Amino acid sequence: MILLSSEPMQKVRIICLSEARSPVVSGLHRLGVLDLRKSALAISDDAPSANYTRLSEMMIRVQGALDIIGAKPGKKAAPIRHGKLIGEGAMAGKFKELEPRMQKIYGLRDELQFISEDNKALDNAESIAKCFGDLKVDLGSLASGVLSFVGMMVDDRQLAKVTEHARKFSRNAEILTNKAGKNRNLVFAAYRKGDQAVEEAMKALKGEELDLKAKYLDSTPQSALKSIARRRADNLTKSENAKKDLAAIGENDRSAFMVLRESLGIELARAEASSEFKKTDKTLAIEGWLPKARLGELKTFLHRVTGNKFVLEELKTDELAPTLVNRPGFLKPFDYVMEFFSLPRSDEIDPTWIFIVSFPIFYGLMVSDVGYGVASFILSQLIIMKTDPDGLMCNAAKIWRISAIPVIIFGLITNQYFGLPLNNLFTNWAGVSWISDVTWIVGVTVLFGIVQVSLGLVFGAINETHHGHKKLAISKLTSIVLLIAGTVAISGLIFHVFSGGVSTIAAGVAIAALLATIVFAGIEATEITNLITHSLSYSRIMGFGLGSVILASLIDQAFTPHLGPGIGGILMFVLYGAIFLTLHVLNMIVSIFEGIVQGARLNFVEFFSKFYKGGGTKYRPFAYDKVYTEE
Image 1 (cartoon, rainbow, N blue to C red):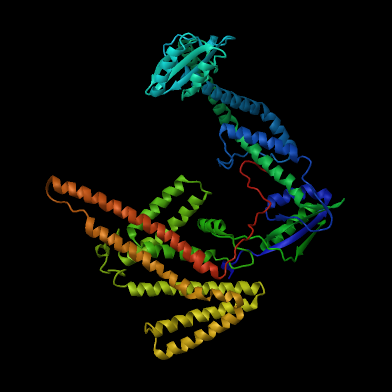
Image 2: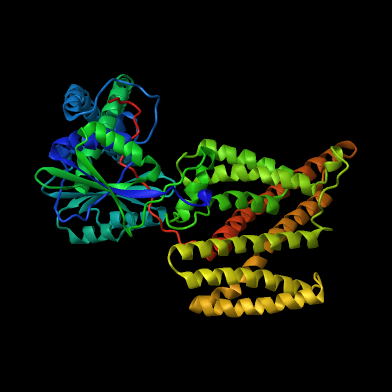
């Protein structure tokens, strides 16, 4: 059962002298074993250390500088050791040393932002100036106490109204027009302020009003365009120079900033950790969870740093311990998916190992084609290479890559190579046939269901026993008897798999187990109906697998390309080959999708529902990873 449970945890309380705070806290941080918890002791709460605010300000400034020069949070580079840089004094000195560089970085950032905003203003002014074409209008002298000026873009239909207005208001307004593009026309009007007739006529036009007072429109449109071009070229030069300066700073100082960021992160964590402590005038109380296997390591550390002036209590508590699992690195993606679904509780069976074994088998059976398996392996590897290693997509692809191996194995067993039976090229064994052996395959998949559902009920009995629910634990066991006996009875009485005597005895046992389950389970006995349906649900392995094989076989029969004589034969070969590949790709996509979805469903619904609650708390020790710093 060790594989099916999380790491045994122990809650402890450390009491030491206040004068030992610094070495104890920094030492615990280096040791990285204690998941801190707020103590329930009726003494004063501790608070973040006095330097927390200053450290936070320094971290924000350093992180901002790194974001600007390109070292984003979480991006890993080659470890660069720069000696000891832990402690507020050392970091303050390093921060002061890098402050001129940070000022330069932020100054260059501001310059680039100004250039970006200025380019937007230039774009706006340029688009307006181009609308005027060759019209001789001095846009810089439009301010007047007597006249109002309006520029508007209208379509061709609205332009006809403008011509009518120009004749009507020829004495009160001057209206100029210019063709600015397909179905785009500039209308520029100058009229006496307060002339309501002209104003209403212009407002009646359905178009886009232009901002004639926009920045850089300070001369004729033709002169403005030339000035804008010069300004844009000047901005481009300044922008390129600023980017070069930032790149140079990044090249020279990025590692120093990353060292300082890591050091600040370490000190910030230590300063903030105090909020989880309790204190008196002379003592400090620290509580948390750690793996039982590391208790001796913690005691040895406390002896060394406190001079044996400490108390370590192993606490008995009803609090749910955090969950810690230790698995080989290549299986971590399964833990990621389990955590994404719901983290196992520390006081229940951890089903991840069953999931690790069963999901690839179910997926492999449902796809079971050597060609599809090889394609799955290649595609999953490409996704792994192109996605975030810590993201869901990458972790799911790693599971897919592992699951591609059973697909190939079952493809060899069922003699499927993109639907073609090619085992005869290597051996005389024809393999298991999805068509002729379908009855046997159905029986095997249902047997899978009975075994896994029964295993889930065993796990449920163990969990209920741990939680003190003995009647529910017994009902789980009687449900197993009901499931197995009921299967034997149905198989014998309906399908004549067993003799009449065996089937009759099994039916009697099933009825007795049913009554016992109802008595012990109470209201939860409503789940009895799921015993058979969930077990039969595993036959979907056969259904989807058979469907994929039949489709692949039909594709092969109808579109396997054959090279015929002449140009026509070549063209037909190419056409049939394209159809053949396209249909197989589509069938492969459907098979892969269904294999993943149904394989996950059989675990998360049919299996987990028999025992799994989830909702655990992840073990998060007070620790850090040293990449750039030393202590």
